[in-house]
Amino acid sequence: MNSNPLNKSAIALNFSRAARHYDTWACAQADIAESLVRRLPATSFPRHIVDLGCGTGLLTARLLERFPFAELHGIDIAEGMIAVCRARWAGRSRLEFSTGDAEDACWSSLRTDLVACSCSAQWFCEPEDTLRLWAGTLQPGGRMACALLLRGSFPELEVAHRESTTRPFEALRLPDEDLVPPMMADVGLDVECRETGEIKVWYPSASEALHSFRRIGAVFTGQPGHQSLHADSLRRLLAAYGRFSDASGRAPVTYHMQYLIAERAR
Ligand SMILES: C[S@@+](CC[C@H](N)C(=O)[O-])C[C@H]1O[C@@H](n2cnc3c(N)ncnc32)[C@H](O)[C@@H]1O
Image 1 (cartoon, rainbow, N blue to C red):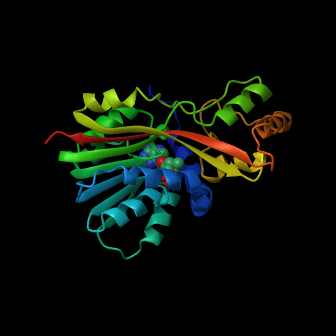
Image 2: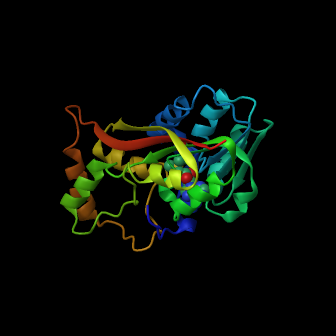
């Protein structure tokens, strides 16, 4: 994960716009959040939790079920996402939500026992520095829990794009599974769980599968060098994507995930 020249204002705007309907479309993200929390050790009882890139709170909700007495701070760059969280948990004590950049050094003075992050790190510009920043907030014995999208995710989109346009596939720079565990070790974390998993979500059609990205705010609009597809290219892309459909016309979106839990030495 090298530095990523992403435009953060565009990221914030796109996710804010998607916030109200995000949960209807984020089936994969809901499964992934649950899978991540399930992997936390039974002996873990964090008191101060941070959810990085909390979105509408899919992971937050799982964490609150598991650790009902913890204090939890959700941080997201998209104001619209934070507004959904504040409305969802209005009046609930020990919960705080902030609009902000998880990569900002301002958070370094926090003291945490669990830093969790699900399906968000692919939008970070400096993932290694951000990992170091948050590892530095962990108390001894504290944990970092990450669900990371791996390179090879969205193969249908990648193939369809290659077949239907002359332009290179603009995608996030996703890590392969050997990249982040050593980074965690470098910042003083012992990796205690390292697993991969595939999640395939089926949509009623190729067009719905394609739209699902936009509907959760995961789009490149506003990113450097981004150009929208012309109508012809879009038609070809849809046709190519359609070849992944099953007999009833349903089209998949495939996520390759890595689940990492790492502890800061006591
Ligand atoms: C795909 S959503 C995942 C949200 C949530 N964690 C979930 O599992 O549903 C990615 C989230 O990361 C947020 N995000 C992207 N870059 C960020 C940054 N630099 N700091 C904080 N949040 C960020 C986006 O606004 C968005 O809400």
